[in-house]
Length: 397
Image 1 (cartoon, rainbow, N blue to C red):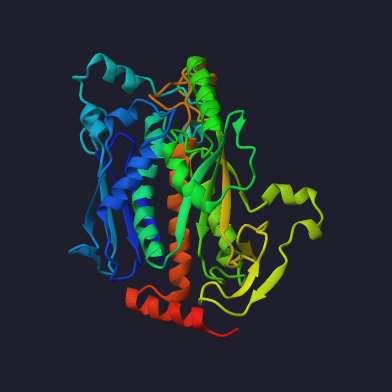
Image 2 (spheres, rainbow, N blue to C red):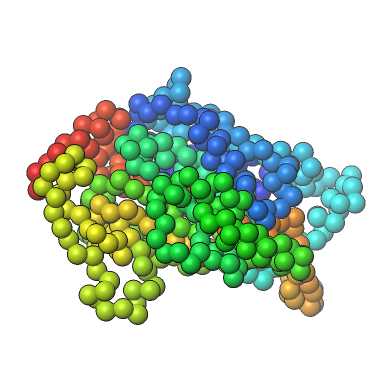
């Protein structure tokens, strides 16, 4: 099974990604990986950390002369901010007594958990009163490693002409009112917008919302959408709960920091409609290319998945992000040492992460879909996958 793992702390030396069971024989572009990392760092509403970091991936193993070997792929992304945190975050040596004023504050200012963050739950779980032992790994900085891994998985899908794109539907009260947005329009327009919204007028409204939140020391959430086109029918399975593709996709999206809700296709809106207005009627086209002929639907309310499997339509998934928990005007909390009332800690942070979260959503989708694709067509070598895939597409049904 193709899977990935990440390691590293937000202010540690580096972030690490490792991909297992990736097929041999695929030429990997490091430029495409770095392009995705740059996209993740962008977006109106990002904080000062993005001015420090300039994420670039370095592949340590699993490739030779740019071609995958079939062995585990290891990726490293170095943290530029590490130089400012060595004394506090050294993995071996105790904290130095020679700290400057800022470092002393950071060392001592980690006992007041942020409401809505992993701080308190993690402290109780791992029996620590130093919240930095929790928040460093809980931080969304970890998603840089996810994006690097997802960029590699995306190149496998791209080889088989499977395309992916994301865009932002809402931030705060500003939202897209137009329901039908073509895939190619998202491709051409989303990355031109600082908030990754295809409508310039709505983009301006979103930026105004973010500016107002920043002025008030607050944060904002929103909704992003990820789409995948040109998928074959039959990825995933209905055989067991853990083989259902929609379950895997929902879990992947919910694992992204700040995501609190996921829907596929019409999702929650379907609950208020009758079945006749929800399900997509079937039609058949007897001729055309191997990918265009066969069964198809004129609508896509199911979002490309039925019974835990791809149905050949475009896969559409949306995720709702809550406002992040780090507030410049912090909420009331309780100090974990003396149990006194206090104000939550503040960390250098963002106002809105929705545009960046959309890029992370693409990466998570790529990993899940690449795993489902190789489960179906094999994962030893690219040539074997190609042969199995072409035979499947040509199979008469």
